Image (cartoon, rainbow, N blue to C red; front, side, top):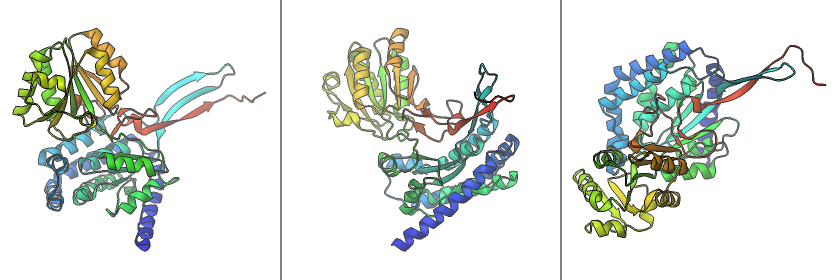
Length: 421
């Protein structure tokens, strides 16, 4: 067993050294070359669509016991492949983040100081189930001048390999180093362990997946981590909400795609409107196949709702289940979110601008939304072209992580012969 682990470590270190050399080259690559690579990769995705779908079917056949939500995340369709291709093209159209002048000032001694954006270096991406992450992460890292080592879940091995072949084709077409975008050569968990211990070889780890994966990464990593553990998102329907708008927003926020981290997991509804509106909301979502876990106040209005435990309100369902609680205004709502939330995304539905301001200002979460679905917490919807993940920590980046968030900065100091006295 140790011999196998040692061999996997050697494989990782070879990949990481190649990635670091490629990152040095990619950091200086001009925008036209990066954009050409993305465009060529998008064309390859379309041309090889049948191969990708066949690989995805092999993955699905090899994992028959997945939940419906997990299977949905793993499944590719022609529409999802086209969305991946368009995502690459959208990233190509975005401004190059590398070399941006972030700030400039002149000191009394005449020194001109500039803060300039630069790539982070080598990114380690560890993710589960969703094959499109392979394309999204590679596109964002490439455009931001970072090399990336992608380690997808074992259940998506064939899909990730087929998508990576398209990305490699794009790199070759543009004359960029293929080692700038690599997929782990093995699904063995030892490869993840090697990535997490890779101080000096990897500059940043980004995990994207379930709580178990993220917890392991946070506990074991010896390199910086950009992560969120859960997407326990809330939609709060305030007393000043438009009922029709609230019904439409909640149905989308919960049921559009239940398995994504931006899906609403808990409905909080003001006591003042709950007797009139809650039965309508329950009827809407039940018709879409949603189940419920409700507190005593909600069950007093809709007695057929199953009772919620305290733990239910701290559960990221990632399924067609909605926790429901009746609250007493904005402050009561914020207190509930602080107690149970994961600081991901929260929404308020109201026509009362002051209530919306109070709600948004009172959140600690990475994203606050007024009168729209929580499922808009997505890099493409933010105009980032795609996202490499959602960050809920307090350092470096928060919310959808796109091109700008994959850059750090350095200083250029321009003098005219100054020396320190």
